[in-house]
Amino acid sequence: MTEYSLKRKAFQRLVALTAYVLIWSAVFMIIEQTGEPNTVVANRMLEEVKNNISRLLGANISEEHFDALVNKISGAVKVRERPDWKYWKTVDFVIQSLTTIGFGDLTPRTLTGQMVFIFFAVIGLPFTMVTLKTTGELMHDVVKKLIIFFERRFLQKQETKNLHFKCVVFSFAAFIALHAYGAELYVTLNQTGYFEGIYASFVTLSTIGFGDYILDFRETISKNNVSDASMTALLLFNLPLLLINLTIVSCFLNSIMFMLEILRKRNSCISDCNTEGQENPVPVSSNTDQEMATKASF
View (cartoon, rainbow, N blue to C red):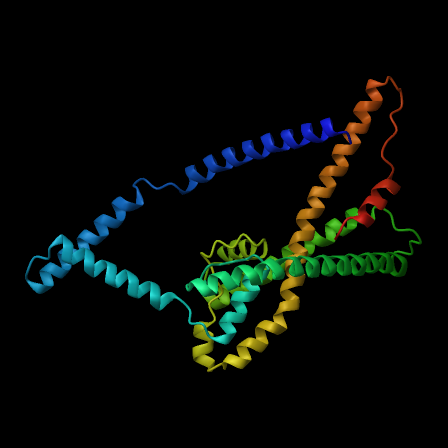
């Protein structure tokens, strides 16, 4: 690929991405925008609270005193909702950071902690990426062997064709099963609706991590009197599973991207052949797809 074609491709994709951002921004604004600004709704709610307090006390409260009361209550609620830096929760914080999920429910608040976090992340993030890459390569090999074994053992096929497409189908099935399981976790622990659980699972495992839905273990810990050591062991035991889950989501998204790239190259080949006046354009062989698939990380 020449430097000019690379620049042209980068420019085209930047324009397409910009258009994608603008279009979907409009869609979400139309869906989510309410009739009133949030500040108006909040002020009306606060005015109702102020009137109720004044009625209970039998005296008017000045705006200054009421604002001070609201700030105190708001600050207390934030502190109450903020998790403590227990060891198991710190392990959860470190895992969230390294996988770039980053819910934001627990963050360094001291300057020392913030500076140490930068040092920790600069080393830890590349190490996590390498680990995920290795996990993906291992899964790719395992899935290929399973498909080949299944076709030879049960379908009596000595040669496996369209292996990459079958890997895409497998990753899609694993993607669906993964989010069905994730939704059940959110339903059980957070008492959300099932489709809310699917949304929360996707936001988590795609590492978008809005933080609007976070698996809440506090009630489970309180009811079952789970120790700090037990929660730490549970998180460490689930770390390989989390890496596999992240790999499945990444594989599914990468598979879509790879299939689109194959289609683009086929269309480009056909277009070039037609331009040259060839009567029979040479299609991209399945062997070429197979070789490209082998190089791609599952």
